[in-house]
Length: 167
Image (cartoon, rainbow, N blue to C red; front, side, top):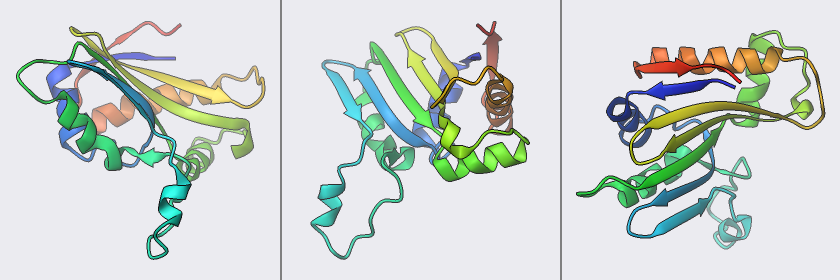
């Protein structure tokens, strides 16, 4: 686990105004403004079945690009939100690619998810990396590679940050 403390304005622009994180899946989110809004990223497949001309989604969760403007609509305004939390995940095909590229000897069935957890508490923004496995594996190579990937991703997208100690 790595805690990135990004520059709030810079990261919020990348998160809400640009396509920086659009290829990630949106697992869930909470936004507190004048109300508390909870958004479950799990797709309701029955909704898409009603329209035979629409393509079936390729995942069980929405992509961030499909909910980003909705979240931005809740957040924008004269007042900053009291808090928010967004959980993003790498999609399964990208996880397989990640395992191969980083030469990690895990099967795709071993990995539940590779996550970026964005948390804003009204004052500071954090992005906490996370990994979830379907079985116990003492090998930490996946976690270390994911932490490094997250730092590199932020660097490549010019999102300034400081790091906190790993736990």
